[in-house]
Length: 71
Image (cartoon, rainbow, N blue to C red; front, side, top):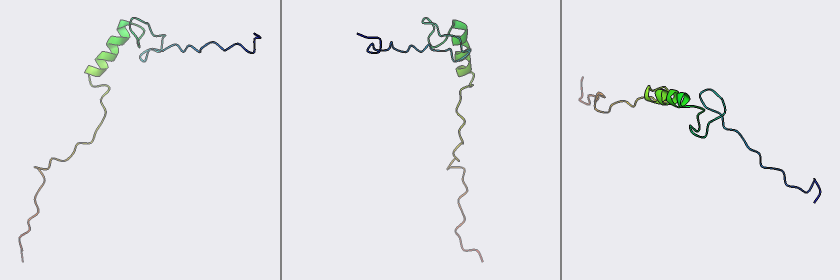
């Protein structure tokens, strides 16, 4: 088998910590450490990852138009 016939080795992509971008640790995956995992948890619990949404108007609080005949 020549060198051109050999299959290329699989590309291994190292996962990065979403908090600090260091290499992820297998024990705390996808984070690099317990500290970064706790930072992420605090962001979730504190509402840091909340998706902003427009509130729907309350149908009970809407005014009903007066349909009486007023001169």
